[in-house]
Length: 383
Length: 119
Image (cartoon, rainbow over all chains, first blue to last red; front, side, top):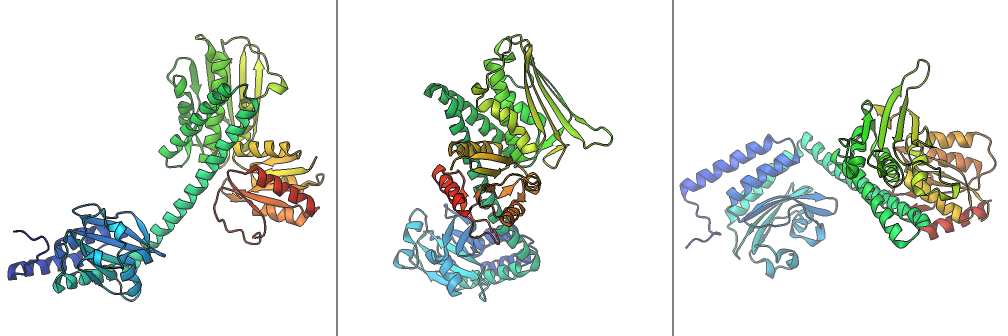
């Protein structure tokens, strides 16, 4: 009968286990990053201990972070718990190795967190006893008392891990990781709040000029989709700069895309910062929707010409100039000042707000013309 | 609150337009709406008719708005911050009201009310 928890230390097996431990220590001393440490620990700790699962837990301020694991079933990889609420935290705070033969008999274990797992017994040993920064956990699927030699091996691994983590370059990598995570979380929070504020803006302004709940719904939904597409494009570029042509392509996609014969598009590569890219996308969206409802795109023969260039006259700052010209649509009449809705307002002001410069909307009888000129800048640059 | 002249510094077009609408709804006059710190400072440099208050987004396209806040403070013009960042350090301005985004109309109204007392 195979007892998974039994570890029979015959001479041959003992030697090979020792060799594995030595190899592991050597591998650990060659690691450069936290991820590399986790990879070594993950693969060796299970082999060395014979456990059904191992976890590598990092201390992150007052939380324990289950960075990596290797087990017969899912544990808590990626999750964070308060140090005071988990056994890895206990081991780190008390600077002691913990051996628990039956977890459901021990009060230090958060039983609810363990119930969905296979774990019945465990060993948890802190990494760096002086001031623990991590912990190594070994888990078994049945109640048993892990033999002292297994506990000893895990402690040796923990010491080797401490030495590896202690090395200067690893410490720097750890700090950078945690810093980056904090930075990303804060950035995410900021972007989400700004996005919600944008949605709030779109909703309230669409509401002001909507003639009926149905009309509001249509308009609002269309703009919400445009906002979502703008973000999708930015996410694809990891919120780096966006190409004007790509923004245009995304905005035109619901209406046939750049390849559609009704659009004639030309201009050099231009890079736009993420926040400005959203405004550019939303403005283009309004122009297109307007063209589809009342302008060139409302008839099959109509065409939209979009062209941009960089004007580099001697003695003056390089200027970006874009023109959106509609042709072949129904005769155009300018809306009265009272009729100016959110759409035209955004078209007139949205771009100049984010990129500087000025926008002009001309309701020429043969077709609407929108021109935008702005100085090249950090936000709007030739690529 | 009628005719109170308020300046806005906000780099996101959609949010700026909404704040302008909200202020106009409150009976205020938007004396200037800027998407860059430099533009706002240039406006304040000119000798313009007096400002009654300002609403400042904290992060303006990567630049912090604090130079504008300093200039307003020097002129004795009250202002509030509006931000999507949770807890941004703002040395020297810890006592200034911060409006969270998305903006709550009631909070904005209270803030504008508060501008009146300072004058």
